[in-house]
Image 1 (tube, chains in turn red, yellow):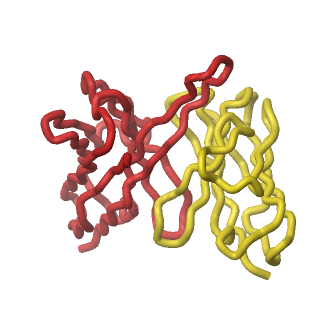
Image 2 (cartoon, one colour):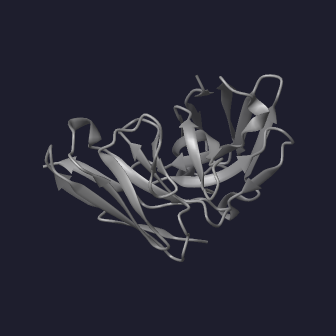
Length: 125
Length: 108
């Protein structure tokens, strides 16, 4: 079955960087884009960026431009999200999710499915 | 960026009730609207795409409707496992992909 498995929880100090992995299985890795979404404690879902595992092209939310980097390793079917200059407000659960899309005529929406299990990143001095 | 606003932010209901959650876009998004369910400590689960199409495996008591700027998610007869937070998400104008702030459905 299609599955995304993320790396474990991290604790970082302010100013540090964190790198979270997302390993895909059950499908052709290079055929589907991967999103990253975060959720601060008690808050909603916030889109961070997307990567095309085939060519490595990326697009980031303006809020994270310059601080987030998405990369991929096709040999291990793994996508990485690195966030730098961490501050306390970056404490959140970070999710990867595969981009889904319609293939039928007249349907053009894109969605997030499946999701990884989430990785808690805690930023604290 | 397109803003998505859900109402209500929270809702109390009983097993067997029919409930409706509303999602409004800041501009027309045609039918580029999806719904998710999230339970505490878990990743979101994909429910409905293109405003009204049920994802495979999702119970038929869930339904979606709407187009343009106004959308609804309806649960026809609440089951105990339906108490969760629900999010809408637009993909009409991306990036960024934007979500509603969520609607928490609680047991009365």
